[in-house]
Image (tube, rainbow, N blue to C red; front, side):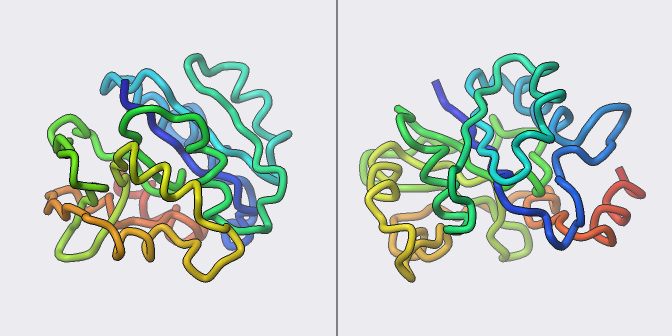
Length: 190
């Protein structure tokens, strides 16, 4: 079973409110993202929450098949949230921040990781994006990184890893919906 870790433990300071709770198509952005994942056969969704965890309670009660995990100290940075989400995962795992729209065809993008490959990164016009598919051995190496070290960045770890970069035609893989302006531009086109 391939799992998917959605990261939303940041304080959404640029957006000004929790991104997962933004209104989107009659629900919330979190619900829309989970729906896309579940429609593609993702059975295990792990949502990593942080400072705004309490604000998500009502939405989480409406979601099935989503495991919420709390990063007890999200101020340690996004890598610490990644580690909270990956803890105990077996097999390959997709990872993405919640503020990157999930592409509609994960299965078409999926590349079987061979024993000597660590990760698959979608690219659009040469830019790396999300979600990133991580192998189980690479996940174990990520869990061993000290979250306080300068190496505690997924992009840094991917540069050190055997990473497959796969061009995709979906520009959403490089979006980052972390400001009201970016959100307004995205929802105007969605």
